[in-house]
Structure formats: structure tokens, C-alpha cells
Image (cartoon, rainbow over all chains, first blue to last red; front, top):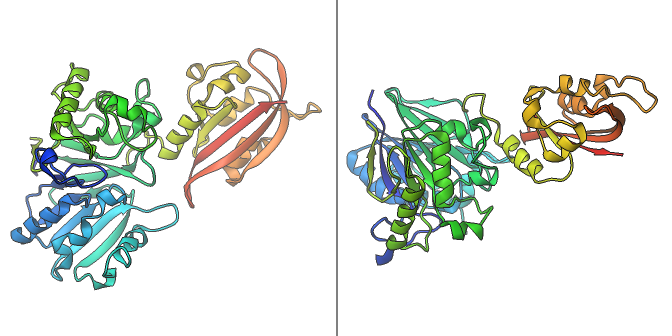
Length: 284
Length: 131
């Protein structure tokens, strides 16, 4: 049973941002691969980063893919239609994600797979696709890796994920505004995603805004860098990876944000870092 | 699902909502445990929530000796919070309590069930007013 390793294929928030100003950390929206030892794949979110991942999976001959969606805002779903394995009849794809209060995950996703949003209907998809509503019981691989989900604070049904294997753990919270219900002074049972992230080695957390920007966007579902640091401290995470970068932030502005996070997290076990496309996080 | 100690997100949101209300408000989870009441409620019941902590809602309500306007003990099944927990339907009633400061007060109480999904009952929210 291996420890957890991740590869980031997209970490931009809200909308893709190609261009020279964002080339350093990348412009693709959320997509993270949990690297497995066998011939299957575990993918978190289907932002535009999943397009390049799909090509990579085809090259690796992967035929069975588990895709876990935190929520269905477009920046976490828009890459799915251009995910190469979806168009291969030899691939089986299990898609896990949140149902709404009235619709199943399947019915919600199919809305984006039909005209006028897309020229094809989902019935045209050749891969064998199965949908699974979350939250549900913990999901496990034969290799002993487990994934747990729970609803977190963000507009609409939204999940956070905790992945564990061989004593290492990571929490994935790309879109999360815990400050809306309070962070400082809250016991973990009252903290959004408190159980998901408690004591993890690494937390990938929404840090979209500077503190000034957040003041103008309270309730939009995202966190300031200060709240990301406060959350990481509250749950006792070993390391904070700043995720879901604001589309208006250039590489230089992101690095200023990282510096601010490091000032705020002075006593942290490890200094916070910016997520970057292509980054591999090995939690051994 | 994560371990049972984590509060359901609807309760977390309800607590944030209640914390910003000037209307006395309390929350109980699906087990029937009082899990929070706000500052406005503290003013009515005469005790801070941090002093009370989580406890069975029936025990907490019983301490206030709920009774009808004519002084008869209020049957538990008529108490709005108990009704909302048992029947999972809203309820409203006026009755008399004795606060921790010993003052007798007539209160109006409205209780509503909280469902995260149609079949997922997560608790109740109770609002009350001094008459």
C-alpha cells in the first residue's frame, strides 16, 4: 500500500486564464490526479486541466477511471466534455459527485451535455459511464487508499474530499469559505470541513483572494489567504497548498499572496506554497 | 460521510444564521440534543450557551417548567420543539416558563424541522419571543 501522491493538472479558479502573465502557475481550472499504483486512475474535479490529463491517461492505457467532483460549477466541470477517455468505448468511467436537493448527480451533469451548451447528447458518449451520488460511505481502492467526502461551505451542494493511504492524508477543498460560519474559536465539529481536514499532512485549500479583495466578496464562496491560513491552523494541517487562484492574479501577484501566507503562518510546520500546474505532491 | 462528531453542514449554516439574529434562536440535532443557542436566547433563558453545553433538549426545556397559561404542566408532546423533532413538522405555541433568574415569563415558540434533503432530517431550529 503506497502513500498518497498527487499531481496538479489545473489550479486556477473561476475561469481559464491562458497567457504569459499566468504561465508560471497555470491557467487551467481545477483538476488533481491522485497517483495510483495500478492501472486505474483517481481524478478530483473536471476543470479544464482534465483535458491534458485525459491525453496522458490515453497514453498510459488507463481504462478504468474514478472521477470525483466537488461540485458542478463550470470551472470544475467544463473539461469533462473534452476528456479523451470519455470518447473511448473501452473505458469505464465512474463519476462521483453531489446531488442537489432535488436532482441526482446524473441529471445535473446531463444538463451540460446537451444543446445549446454542447452539440452532442450524453447518449452519444461511447465510454461506459456510471454516476454515483455523494456523500456516501467511504470509497476504497483495492490498494487500501480511501476517500471520504462531506458537504462544505460554498454556494450550492459542494463537497470536500479527504484521501488517505498508508498513514498519509490530504484534504482537497478547492472552493470553500469557512469564514462565513467562523473559523477562529470554533471547535472542529462546528468548523466546515473540520473532520475532512483534521490533522492532514497537506490541505489544498481555496485562497482566491487577498484580504482586501475578500472584504468585497464575502459570500461568494471563496477564501482570503488569511482565512486559508487560519483554517489550516485550526485543523492542524501539516502543510497548506494555496489553490483556486483568482483569474485576475498574475504570477507575480500570486507570489505576493504566497509571501503573505508565509507571514501569517509563521509558526506552521511547513511554509505554505502555491499550487502550480504540473506540481507533484508526494506525501511519503 | 465523515465521523458522526462533525455537525451537518445545514446545522453549521443555521448556527451562522442564528448567531447574526436578534431573535432568540436555538438549534437541536436529529438526536434531540440542544447544540446551540444564540446571544439573544441567552438573554431570555438567563444563561450563556457556553455554560450549558450540549445536552438533551428535553432536559433543558424541562428545567424551565413549561406550563400552560392556567398553570397546568405542558405535556411534552405539545411543546413545539418536541413536536418538530417527533413529527418533523413545524409547530407554534404560547406557554409560560420560569427563567433561571426565577422570573416567570410567557413565551411564544416556533419550531421548524431542518431537512438537508427530502428524507435527510438533521435537526430543528426554534425561535422564541417574550410576549
